[in-house]
Length: 381
Image (tube, rainbow, N blue to C red; front, top):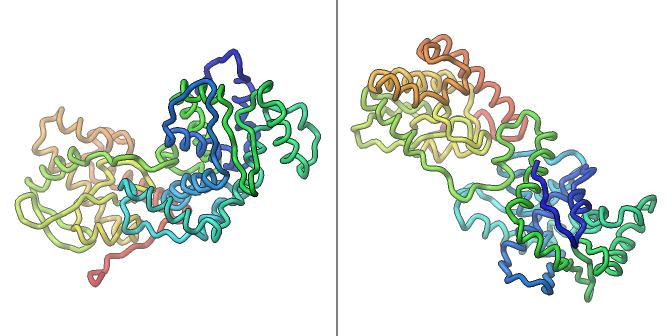
């Protein structure tokens, strides 16, 4: 857990309690939305500056932040969390948009802005802007009824803005609500941005991990990667295997080798949006049409034996070409993730049992999370 830096003139102890007693994601996502808007504004900072954001702008950012974990990665935010109700109303089809495409986030934000009232996005801010300030006024709010906490918190933050120095104060102008970040907190956040971001993200990962205990790679799923890592290393291993002995696409049956003109792609057998990694044991060569058709679906169990056959093909064919040290280096993820020795990797029975167990487990997890399952290739697509 990140330790927040000390500061003399502001209450860092209260700030560190922002996410205490978190029963839903709102406080975490709201604060992360504030951080994103601060980074986006890229303002020149001076001690007397006041930075203001509208409730609407922050609500839009919250919906955008929730979309990737919930809709793309299928993470659960918990039973009490109502962000799904908002997202379910949003009309945004990302099937044709690559998640790492720079335009994806822009298109998502555009859709949220256009449908803001239709999806009732402002509902996410009914309580959270006030609840996030509660650590700064814990004594005054203790024992107060929920019905008065919002107005009381706003009043306290405004009245004691210069003395208590809460993170922000809340204002209403012509039925539009705003938060104004305290200049001292603005200075603190910008001076310690990396630490504060890590603290927030770590807290969000812990929250999501409790609600998705069987889901792999939670930390990689709270936001889309800015850039997908190149698969050139994995491509090289498969190219060597195909050069030594041709193989086929498990979905279409089309044959290809390293020397023919057939175009193939490396397919994440278990969807990348489920596993969030590029481990070689989950990558197989398939035709580009099958790869595009499959998208982020989980293949039908009909393909699992063929997948294992392809992976064993990779293991054995690279073993014939690589030096012993090169081969072990290329197979270290197989050995580590499948919990097999390098000798066991070459045993068809041991290999089949280990990979079958891993894929079966991931299939069950992905299906439970809501990923499309039992996908079969259709040549007419």
